[in-house]
Length: 73
Image (tube, rainbow, N blue to C red):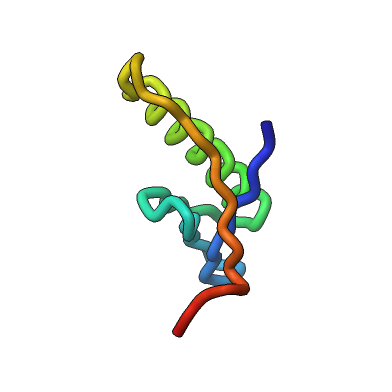
C-alpha cells in the first residue's frame, strides 16, 4: 500500500529540517533534500509500524477520504 504525505521543509544548503504535516510527531533533519526525504520516509514507516503494533487485537481499521475543497470557514 502506498500513501502520500506532505513533507514541510525549511533551511538551505547548510542544513534542512522538515516535518510531516499529517503526522506532527515526525521531525527530521539532514544536509540535503535526498537525505531529509529518506529520513522522513523511514520515520513514517517506523511510526506507522509502531501504531499498528500498539493496536488492540479487537480494534478495526477503516480508511476514510476527506474532500478538503468542501471546507467551511
